[in-house]
Length: 317
Image (cartoon, rainbow, N blue to C red; front, side):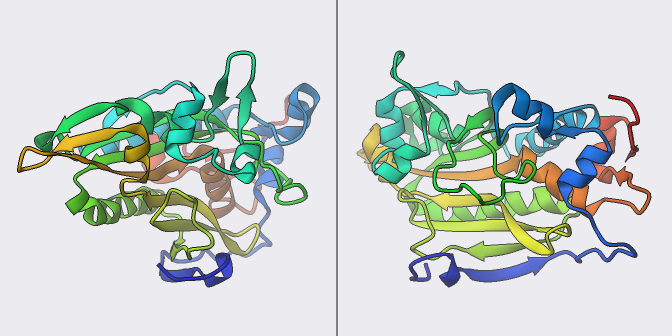
């Protein structure tokens, strides 16, 4: 892992896909989404305040198309599909390593009356799925693909990415998780990164693969690889997927073990990765597939799920 204090020490490992060229000035996702009447942040602000949104019409259909695509690809790799709880106990959130510091705690929504945390990622509820349990060695790796709504305070991010749906308090996400043999966790990490890449390649969206430095990783992670999609509206790559190997950091806290080939108990390694962050994936689709007339083409891989190939401007409310 490259040593550094922040993201400036991150290393770009490779770039994949051709950056699209336009015969017009590309728009950002909010301008496109509002013109197509499929993203509504103004009405959401009336209802919930800033950093919320409505996904409407075709955007809502595309969300479910992305879920179907990711789940269908994951099932071929023997992932177990799960819809997890989004409220978890403090001991589970602590076991996952996400409320150890004031900065971590500031990111979480906490329901004091019920003493429950809203998850910031399905990873936090999936990691606790097998707390205080023992895997047999032949059960590993145990891979899970989960879908849930996630909630983050976005503390400290005020003034950053406030436009549109890039950084919001509530978002839907497809999460990948693996409980595996410690001897194979590096190999499993490589597998999760390759699976993430297959998802973005299926959408034909250009991206770069980045290894995070020590100062840019989350505390539980021993190694993190990010995927950053190209966003023409910003003329830059932005993070969309992340894969981390947390080794036995979480399994020790949550007491998740396996019986090794000698018959002795040892802690499993846990890994997590992003399938699709729905909002950011829709952003990448809108910006990369926008057309001069204001319409948007639907990625070919999604058309069998959506039932339409193009999104046109909606003149009605």
